Length: 226
Image (cartoon, rainbow, N blue to C red; front, side, top):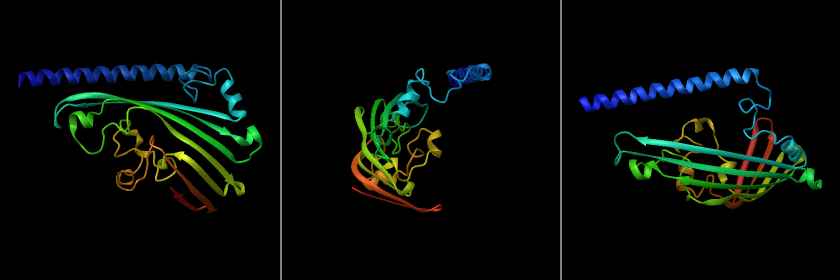
């Protein structure tokens, strides 16, 4: 019991110290943001900024670049198969090519995306549960193409069509409300879809094409052929 008490005391002390450190960083960032210019790291809308105006110029010319990084740490303190921890991560980059700006093909956009996943699955190695505790782990720890597609908008935005190679989950049954949690059961699709229907979720892509029509402000119809 004495050993457990000491371990619990150390854990509590560590958590309190981490919380105080995080609060200090938050207060400092908030104070800096109030007096910093718009291009400051803490206040600008994009982490890498506007590249000295280059990003805006490329977007105006028809090239819109995107990128993200997600890292998730999980630790099994008790239960499961055994105790342990692991870190999983993914890096995604993509570019949207607006053919309306480049070659006067109004409403036409090409999408290209890539993803790299690495790390260790705590669910597989330590817990043994069905739904992964780290939703960024899985689908193969490798560099892959996540999208090569052509999108066309017609009839002043009432009709949208896309064909090519991309994850179904980019357009169907998507909700980001649960993505504040890292368990795959919350983010970002019902797991019965990829688990039992052949539905593909990011970053796994398949060939196909959906059809979407907005007939009224409150009516939306979607379908997809594979």
